[in-house]
Image 1 (cartoon, rainbow, N blue to C red):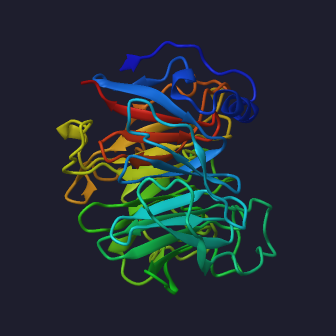
Image 2 (cartoon, rainbow, N blue to C red):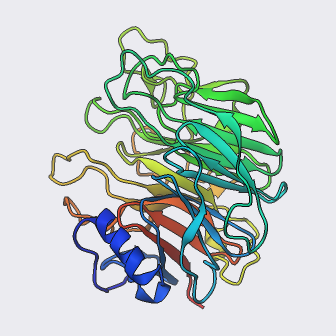
Amino acid sequence: MVRLFVPRFRGSAAVLAWLLLALTAGAAAALEVPNGLTVPSGFTIAAVARVPRARELSALPNGDLLVGTRGRDVYVVPDAEGASPGSPSVFATPPDDLAAGVAFSQRRSEIYIATERGIYAAPYEAGRRVAAQLRKIADVRTGPISPNTDGDAHSTTSVAVSDATETLYVAVGSSCNACVETDPTRASIFSMQLPSGPLVKRATRIRNAIALAIEPGNGALWAGDAGQDDLPYGHPYEFLDDVSAHAGVADYGWPQCEENHKAYVTGADCSSAVAPLIVLPAYSTFIGAVFYPVQPRGHFAFPQEFRGTLFAAVHGSWHRSPQGGFAAAPQVVSIAMRDGRPAVPVDWQNPNAQWRTFVGGFQAPHAFNRVGRPTGLAVGPDGSLFIADDDAGVIYRVRPKL
């Protein structure tokens, strides 16, 4: 691994992000990569923009980058693939909070934004950096929080578009850590045939599927779930799975069933619950995922070994480990794929078998200090991998050395 030694951020990450955005207007020249971040040999990493509370990402054909946030605004980073990316500016402000989810349809030339309670669409026009119009196309969280909630209500909504089928996918988190939902739109994933729907449930009892990724070619939907707390330490494993592979409504079993049909509630029947294809250790917390193109055309195309790879942004945990420090470190991981399935089959005895660290160094081993927490991922038209960080409020760009 290559280590990059430059000054690190200090103090409150959120406050620092806002102050620096005002002082530098997001100029790439003023940005630095935190001390100790690592990328594989042959790659470089650069900080290209500051966007406070950055979450999901979507790359546009002209090289611009859309950034959803844990606020009301969606930003655009002009020419994010270029030598000197432009200053971030507000692209759209939906009439709802938590505009975290963003997606783009090449086929329909349309942008989609997901907030806490709605899905919005806007036309894409190359070079236009303020949404021409924003129209609501669906409602989510239409019912009440579960009466048995433990207070752990998840409020962001994720979206992804399959151009192969002209389908918009929408993931809505649960209203609790472990409960029975009364709102049928929560703890679920939906599909919507574009342009107008309606929403059709594709997955149920999935606690918080924040990370959505479309597999190139066949348009299959993969989802990464953040598992429940308060189970025996180290469980449940967190997972990514091919939702499209399951007919009807895929039942992931939460909160009664987790992992490989394993019951965590006495008397629960887990025989029909989905056993996922990819697992990572408990508390990883997937926020973003993206497939790298099999046949990239850009100047910064990744080497052959990474083509078709599934990348996932691991946000890391708040849980303490027995050794001290946080139980799961923030990082971006790579999962080798072959013919639409992980190259290494799931091993229910070893949640570290299928993945490797691609961008690391966000957290020192067995420590409580971090320099960031990755969230959204996107692949730009020139082949760069973009990474959002909602803790430091930074957008990173990873590409091969040329």
